[in-house]
Image 1 (cartoon, one colour):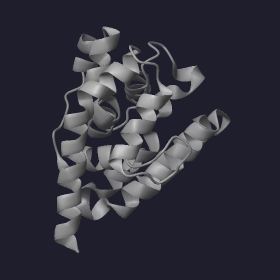
Image 2: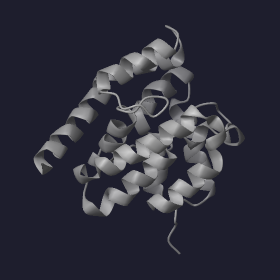
Image 3: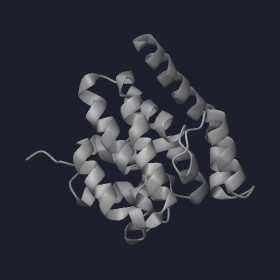
Image 4: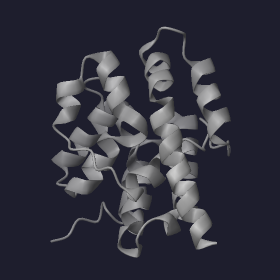
Length: 185
């Protein structure tokens, strides 16, 4: 039986069951899902629902009841596995927005490495949606979003260091998506 989690509706329902108590995180998630829907033409038609589902679920690892490592991409991916979510969805959540860079800072590279990263227009579009959406759902350009993250996290913190190192990788993903969207226009 196919999973409902790789559909926008099923993913939205799961996210709504976990994230609303987190306030701005829930606003961010809703806006990332909306942005993913807006940019879904950057991916193949058969991958559009998966992209939007991944956007709904990208931050579920922040839900307090799912925290085990404290690293939300990994905690979210592990939870999705317990629900028998589709492998690609689990991997997209695990690797959203340059997670490998933060995993390195946290000493969780091997744990994240269990999930293969797909370098694809789907992952790029997920990064685009997340990296152009502020912490309370604001629409930001990429540079403003990175600056906002760097301002929010203390210099030397795992997130600040990881985002600083990931910036070229993230910028390239955002640019690849922008190019694909321009080609559709």
